[in-house]
Length: 201
Image 1 (cartoon, rainbow, N blue to C red):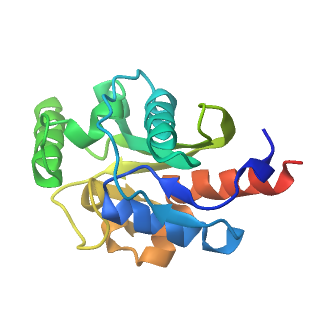
Image 2 (tube, helix red, strand yellow):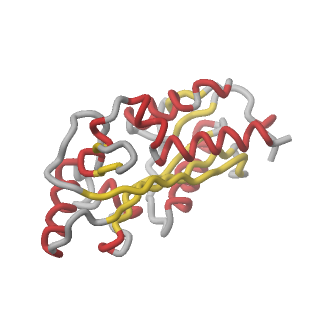
Image 3 (cartoon, rainbow, N blue to C red):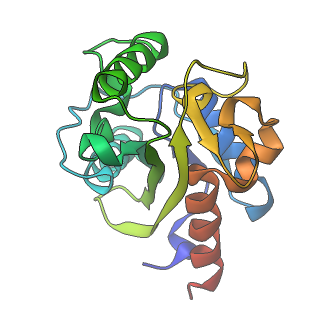
């Protein structure tokens, strides 16, 4: 579908204020009117992949708001845990779990395995759909790193204090927002999305 379908505001389908702000900042120079969604229906994120869940959220929001919606699904995949927490990253320690509980469980699982600096990746799939469910554009980003504990850094959110990014020489939670956006999985996915929108007829 052509990007010409994107008239008026595009609503970010998330209740996570940090994520909505990050998305708006990264797409600030695209000329798109990116706004936080005023309200969102509950969505059961039961997809098997990040793409599945991104589509579930975007299509639900687009139908509810009668406007184009952008959604992402992202998370942490740790090799020695078979890709966990994966699509359950936000609720790894159970429904309603906060970052502290999720991080504690991750460290507990890895400590039990006796591993050091296990390889991991942050993965993000982002998609824009219009009412009716048709996809306008989508992209996926990935950033490789290692899990280290105890936590370091007071910036970022989620697993950022545990995720060591070798090229930067620090944890994600130690990076300034603009530095993080330049290399993050979400930044990579959104810049690729913007490029595909620019290249579309």
